Image (tube, rainbow, N blue to C red; front, side, top):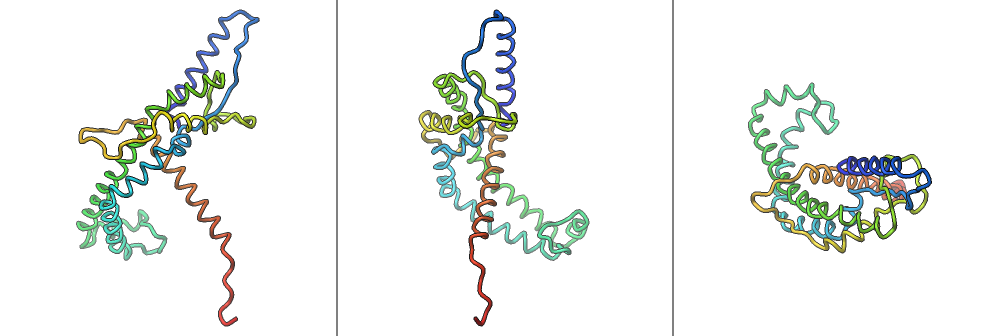
Length: 227
């Protein structure tokens, strides 16, 4: 999301400079809109399909990671003295001085390595779609005669219909209907793709938490035993 902020800001400055240099009677024709980069990519069929394929293609890595995470949790549980589900700074010295510290370090490295493989595939998918975002944005803004696009969190008010994220998603579906999920051996993720991936993961996690809360609220209260 923030990756394109400079791009949009630069466009805004350019439009301002053009307006200042034009005759006083001239006006810029068009409208201002908002768009969310990460949300546009999340909605694309290519990313949804890619995430599903990654779950299958990397199923062995995902299962191994889960197994190693369980082993790691079992080794770390005795040191969680306050039972808050995580290790605080005050609890770390006991871990470092334990007889299992070397095994804990090994498991942490193995979990990180497996996570990197899975996330690397996801970033690769995001990067391929992100490469088509500028073209999709251009298509939508040209068709709708939009002269400026801002991030939704950069404005205080937007009228109904100002958000063109869904239209950009539709354009992405046309430009990049599918992507590869296995990166080449020499591939390295771009900074932009890694940043957008993090924003996508945060958005998906937030949506998952909201869904879980809604499900819990919809569950009927259990009747007391014996009635």
